[in-house]
Every structure is written in structure tokens, then in C-alpha cells.
Image 1 (tube, rainbow, N blue to C red):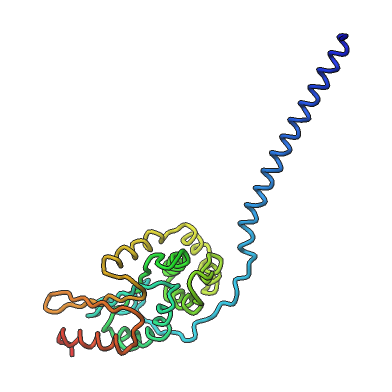
Image 2 (cartoon, rainbow, N blue to C red; image 1 turned 120 degrees about the vertical axis):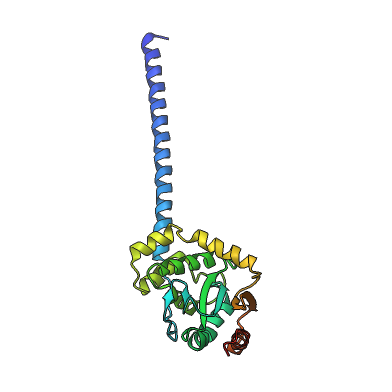
Length: 250
């Protein structure tokens, strides 16, 4: 083998190695590009998926003295705390068919202070998302507006009613400051509060939604009544009237 032939072979080998490295770099670049496209698609596609029809609440409930997720006189003799889930069909029944009568009959006149609390993600992840969205809306004084809008658009459990995209559209419909809402919602500002709702509800004996903890004081002793399920208004009325008699207010 002549020196020239050996040199040519080494040059051919170096060229092969250079081309192999080049092909390897190109593969890496294409893999990176592919991952970037997939990631971009995950970010963009949810915003392109139709959110469907957004329904308005059929009736507007008059609520005065609203404070976040509470409504009514905070010094009312009777306190009722609801533990609920925006995905719960019976919770929707209560919110749409029974709550308006409770508010009009006992909350507005100062007899009852009513508070809505979530029950964590009792039914699923959309339960948590909806609860966090409502609390974020509450930062802008529209907890109950979001509450009513969520239940007006409830169609089932874990069926996509309350995806992040739809919840954002709900916020837009309520004309919230979207920068503030997005920062609150995407930042998980109320995630720990939703967890606390579940923990405190469990301690109170809540096992299903909706459930209501009614408290009042008789001769310095706090009495507690647990009301389970979307009971008719007459059931709430009977419990409230009985408590008023015990307190000597009737």
C-alpha cells in the first residue's frame, strides 16, 4: 500500500465519520423540533376546541350583603354552611330550585347567614377546578355570579363541563379582570382552600353532597343540625323555624 493510498483511505474514513456525525446532529434537531411542535400543539389546541354553548342562569337570585362565598348578615342567629360540588346533580337541584326560596325567605331578612363551601374534588378533577374558579371570581366580588353560572351549565359528572378552557370563558362572560383571574386560577391560589373545605367537611360528618351544617345558640350552647341532600324548601323551613322557637325568637 502506497502512502498516497493510505492517505486517501484515511480521508474517506474521516469523511464518513463527518457525515455520520452530521446525520446524528440532524436527527437530534428533528427530535427537538418534533417535541417543540407537540408541546406547542398541547398549548394551542385546547384554545381551538369549541367550548360549546354557555347558558345563562334562568333566574337571577337577589343577594344582598355578599362577602365572598358568604351571603347575609354575619351576625344572623342561624348559620348554614353548605358543602357542595359543582359537578353534583343534586347540588344543582338545590342551587336552582331550592336556594332561591331559602335566600328570599330567611337570608335576606337577616335570620340566616348562608355560606357555600366546596367538598374538595369529591366527584373529580373538574370539581376542584370549578371550586377554585369560583373562589378566584370571589376575589372580584363575583363568587355568586360564578356559582350560578357554573350550575346553569352543569350537565353531568366528569363530562367536560368545567375544563380549564370553559372556566376561563365563564370568567370572560362575567367580565372579570382576566389578568387577575388567570393569575389566580392558573397559579392555584385556592388549591389549599379547596383541600381545607374537604377536610373540615369530613370532620363535620359530611359524606355526600349537598350537605348542610346548621348551627345556632341556645342558652350559650351551640347546637348543630345536619341536613343531607337536596331536601325540599319545606324541610329547611321546618328546621329553621324549630331553631327559632328553641332560641325564643318565635
